[in-house]
Amino acid sequence: MLAVPFAPQAVAKTAATTAASQPEIASGSAMIVDLNTHKVIYSNHPDLVRPIASITKLMTAMVVLDARLAAG
Image (tube, rainbow, N blue to C red):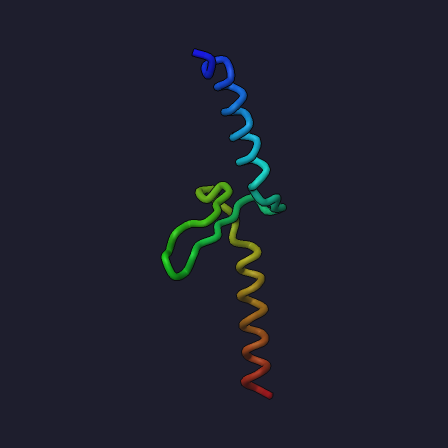
């Protein structure tokens, strides 16, 4: 009976500890996966649809660099 009044405090402490252990990242979404076990270690908005503009820019840069390496 004495443990019941202290239960909300215990839950609040656990929630605060969990929130404090999460990394602070600047991106809108992220996912870290263990390549050996394929287990998701961390995810932040993993289902958020993101535009591919940045990926398109990277692929364009890679194609240009590959073309220059092949030519020269």
